[in-house]
Length: 103
Image 1 (spheres, helix red, strand yellow):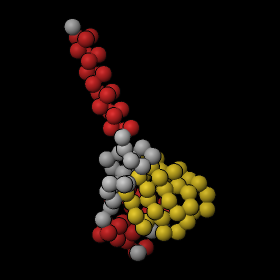
Image 2: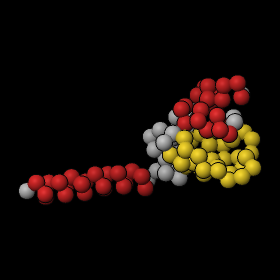
Image 3: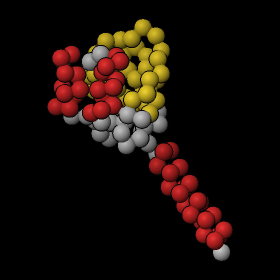
Image 4: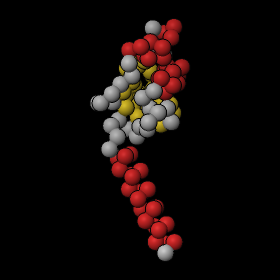
């Protein structure tokens, strides 16, 4: 009986976590200045693939579109023009805070 309960719980967790990750929209950070070569960078707990004037997180999480992730990207790549996906983005006020003296 315990084995059946454990298997059912594991199956439920796998279904819930798998479904949320596969339905996530990519998050794009638009950089004010282009970078010279492709770079992988971790910000907001996810991997961004950066090239030219944008960084893309193909598998974002709940921390990807946050002020902290923006600050991490800004420290590495300079001013951030926008950070978001098709449904939501970081507000203008948070972008200004993110960029600080880079604005």
